[in-house]
Length: 159
Image (cartoon, rainbow, N blue to C red; front, top):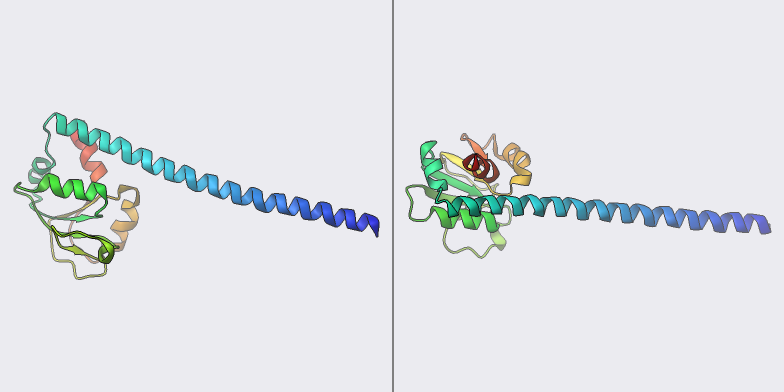
C-alpha cells in the first residue's frame, strides 16, 4: 500500500507539472502573438510617418485609384489617424465601421457596426490589417466594392 501511495503522489506531481506547463506554454504563445501584432503595428506607423515627412499623401493615392467615397473599417488609432489625414481632401469618408461602435466615443463621423446597413462606397480601407482576411470575408457578400488594408496602402506608397 505504501508503494501505491508514492506512485499516486508522484503521478499527481507529474500531472500538476504537465497542467501548469501547458498553461505557461499557452500564455507565452499568446504574449508572442501580441508582441508580433504590436511590432507589425509599430513598423506600419513608422513607415506612415516617413511618408508624411516626405509629404506623400494617402488621399492622392486613393484619388489615383478613383476612390473618392470611402469607408474606414476599424476606429482604433490607425483608423482615427487615417480619418484625420483625409479631412479637407477630395476623399470623403462616408462612414466608419467598427464592431464596437456602441462603445466608441466618436463625435466627428458616423460609426456603423458590420451588421448595420452599409451604404455603397468606392472602397473599404481596413485598419486592423492583422485581421484583414477575416474582415473582408465577413463583409464581402454584403458590400460590392474593393477592400484594401491600410498596410497595403502604406507599403505600396513606400516603394
